[in-house]
Length: 317
Image (cartoon, rainbow, N blue to C red; front, top):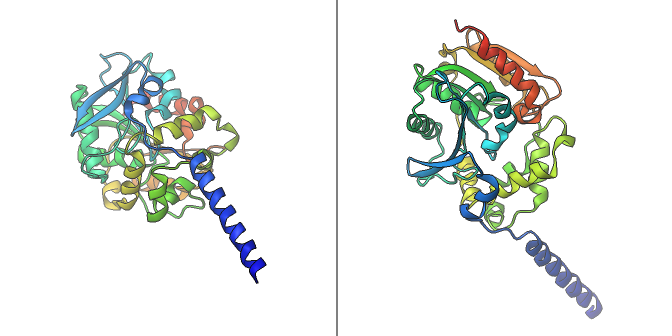
């Protein structure tokens, strides 16, 4: 009996040692914005004050563009998700993109308000500060819901609308990124405010790609480091707690010319949501990319931006 107890004691000690070692190996406290700007806020980045936040943004291309393009990223992403599109567009068009509250270098909303209404106010506040009266608005995932929410609230300002794997209807994911799951687990997410295994970020990014082999270490670096921005992990938990409801009647009332882009391999917001948007928004156009996932604009910027450019060139009804 004493031998068994001794063995159990050794096993318990070993488990504790491995647990402590694992925590120490993945210890990742918050990083101040100042520690991240050298890599992630290089020119032409700037910060402007909107609603009590220092919003990280990039405003590129000709300032005389009568209809600037505004790009909104999704949950846990950043303005960098649009790099491929901007490289293709900014020579001819003015392109505005920014980190939404809770993400990137913008960081938390001071009131922990992550409602669509709060995000819409932020979008309007940013474009007002930049002097854009009317604009093309494109958004992915959460950014897509903010985009159509903005078009509903300010129809006179949104000249064209682009929804990319957008939220808006109830949906049944076939797979959820592990980072999103953790953000919904009260006990575990408290630990994750100080600990962040890189593998969690790597797995989460691969989960939203149609072809996980396209996920590079550099891409994981970006998602990982910007997640560590002070307050972002706690803000993500608040964001997940504030479940976003749709507005079927509102979507059906949209009159703005609308392009719907979707990855057929999206396992988070499946293709049936795309079909509902296409059915509910009169005159909209749906384009599906068979090989792409939840972030098609990032996974294959060239293929998706060409469809977007054709939509821009087409006359509005």
